[in-house]
Length: 196
Image 1 (cartoon, rainbow, N blue to C red):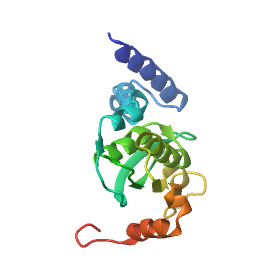
Image 2: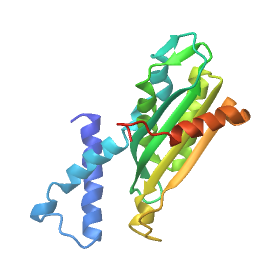
Image 3: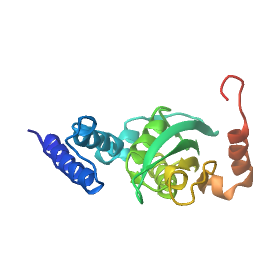
Image 4: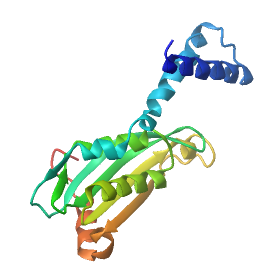
C-alpha cells in the first residue's frame, strides 16, 4: 500500500469509530463502504493542501502591454468550514490591474480552487486569493469579492436559510482609487444577456 492508501485506511478507521459513537452500526448494508467513501471524499475536499499556488501562477505569467482592469467573475467554489467541517459555497470575483504582466485566465479559477479545497473560513479564503495574486503578479491593484452560503448557519445554530456572507479584499489601486473601486463594484452588478 502506498502512503495515500495507508492514510485513507486510518481515516476510514476514525469514521468507523465515529459511526459507532453516533449509535450506528458500521456493519449494516448502507454503511459498510462509508468509511472508505468518506476518506476518499475528504481527500478530494482538501486536495488544495497538496498544491503550491505560487508555483501554479508562475507558470502562466505573460509579458503584455495592457494596463486596464482584468476581471474574472462568478467563479463557483465549494469549501469546508474549519469550525464544523460542513460546506460553504458560492462565487468569487477576482480583478487586477496588470503592471506589464498578465496571468493566463484559467489560473484565476485554479487559484480559487486551491485555497477553497482546504479547511477554511471565508475571510481567509478572500485574503489568500488577493495576497497570492499581489505577490506573484505584482499588479497595480487586486480586488477580490466572495459571496457564500454557509451550511453551518443553515443546518444548525441560527438555521437561517437565505443568509449569505460577502467578504472583500482590496489592494493597491482598488483600495486607494475610488474610481477603480467603483468600476470594479459596478462590473459585479452588471449582468450580460446570456450570462446571468
